[in-house]
Amino acid sequence: MRRRDCNCMVAAAWVAVALSTAVGAQAQETIDQENLPSGTVSYVSCGVGPGSLSQGFTPSLSPLSAVELMMYSPPAGTRIVRIRSGAVDGPVVAEASAENQAGWTRYQLPIAVAVVPGQLYVIEYVYATPVAYIAMNNADTYAGGHGYGCTNNSNPGLDIVFRTYAGASLPTRPVTWGSVKSLYVD
Image (cartoon, rainbow, N blue to C red; front, side, top):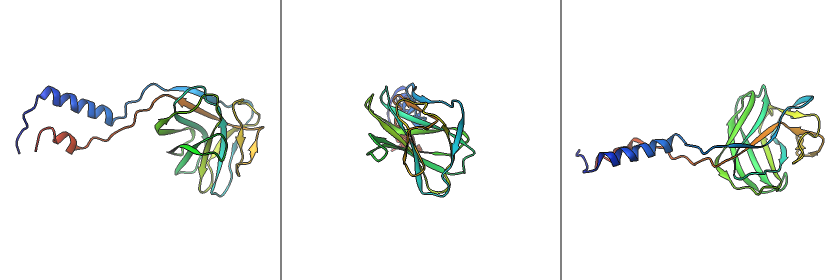
């Protein structure tokens, strides 16, 4: 093995950039839309799947970078959230997955997606077998959209407890030993 002729300061700078990319540096995120627990809160469970529960929302900021849903005693496992444009059966514009956990479960989009402020979007929580208990207000507490029940039937009197985040999450690129080693060895 031999050392390449290189400026060590330049090599160190490249390593620093590679490592900062590997940890997934993120731009600042802002809560855009939220429907917090209010009054009497129920936890919806739909029994055996597959199926989905959904909530409409109307963003005021772009891009959409993450969604959070409030869960209660969820079954273990990874669940998927899809973001649909315009309607509960509209085109999927983004998808994320996360491990279920009690409290706020965060679904970080791999890459922030541009949304049109003022246009309706739908958060679709997809489940295969027993759905986690998702917090739902027993009243129409969110004006920018409404909830959809276990079979995605419209339910304008109920809203899922959720948050959406706006901000550009930067895509990450893993750093391997080979990419660092190539700076020094042929």
